[in-house]
Image 1 (tube, rainbow, N blue to C red):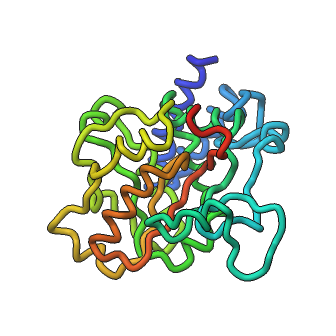
Image 2 (cartoon, rainbow, N blue to C red):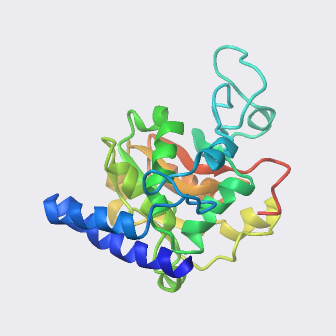
Length: 270
């Protein structure tokens, strides 16, 4: 199964390039042949599905989509609509550096498989699925955004991993929204420990002062409405550090858009 998936990934990437460049009949024919030889399968469970980059009905139904009412600041689901601006208890206690946060789904055992497929298993084909759901969940952030900025990796980790999942998600979304894609504005200036397993305070200490806007590009941030893109929002430590740097550079608004949102009960275990 893994060998077949790898073969499909390599061929699909080649054919996708051909499709985008020329949308040629040979590319469409080759894809049809590939579909027959290696039928598309569910991203989570590998059951057969109708089209690529999709979930089967069972796995789709298990994803917990975040719908209104939700906290305007943290994006967390709320039990009822109180009218006007919706704020959770967390937002009432602490105002973060960002303005609004949105997520497509709750982080659980099923959404974790999608996140990990991209982040740890090089399943780049799931970017289309994830970014599409993020556009749906964060449409109000994207409507008037000027720039999509991915959370950056430190160069050493980027070299080891070979890709930045946040950048891939932002780039894909930028194909279908007016906002520009700017992965060059924000940098992670020092290596940071993996956030997995750290408590909230340790996470904030870990990334404090780690991000900055490139000095020569501050004018590209000034007075802009920015959407910061990442795969998961856990304690908000990384988003907070990034948003502070962007606001310091003069950003008019910084919103956060992720694929999955971790609940309070899960924090410290993700």
